[in-house]
Amino acid sequence: YANMAAEPLLLALFALAVLPFAASLLTPIAIVSSAERGFSLKSSFVDSTSGAPGRALRISSPQSLAPLRGGAAGASASISADFVLKTLAPLMGGLISATMFLAPFSAVLAARKNKDLGELNLSPYPAQCGNCAAWLSYSIILQNGWILAPNVVGIITGLFFTYTGYSLGSPAQKSTILRSFLSYMSVIAVAIACAATSVFNIAAHEVIGRVGIALLMIYYCSPLSTIAKVVETKDSSSIDPKVTVVGILNGFFWGMYGLAISDIYVFGPNFLGAAINIFTSLTWLFFRKK
Image (cartoon, rainbow, N blue to C red):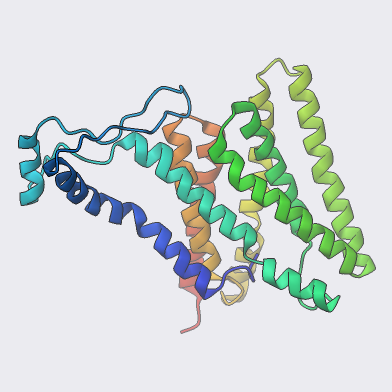
């Protein structure tokens, strides 16, 4: 995935990362303006786990707006924790994930046009197919649209990239891609069959969730072999810091969302993935050439 990140992608991700802070600054201004015009604010957000209306912006009285004007602490109007953790966090995580999935699209289209892969390595994309298929199944079982949406993008792009790599690759590349793709799809098929038949006497989402964690850990732990080489050679030029920053943000947002909905299958691997990317970033800083 080292060739996925580009400067426009970084700028887009930075803009997404500062949105929560911008929203926290601008919302009190909007509340004051609306209240002074006599508007009442009512939440339109729905809790994704219970279907009940969630808490959003609340104003008890015009007097409660006074601290907002003076900037004093203890203002009663604010973005609720439910909105930040159960709406904003998965929205950010989904946008980052979808952006990562779509990043190599132009390079793949160019390779198809030239009928030559060149230096483009598409062998990792069967892993993307397997990972996204697991989490797509998990989201369907739980009827969770936040998890479903980015993984739809991921599996469609993954299948397209895998097919391109197989059709344009050398015989050795074709063999590697085919073996990898069949292995991942076999694991997913067995997991779905076990979930459907309750062979392990546990809930279906727990079967798929455990398989999803295993596949996600393969993805997140892939840089560890690179880190070992960096420590040995004392040269971190093989680490792309932009990719690690994207991984940190992605893991952080999904981890916070998983924590908010009390789902260990979501927050567990994503927090661990963010930690691995932080460690990778520190390794890059420590061994980078001055």
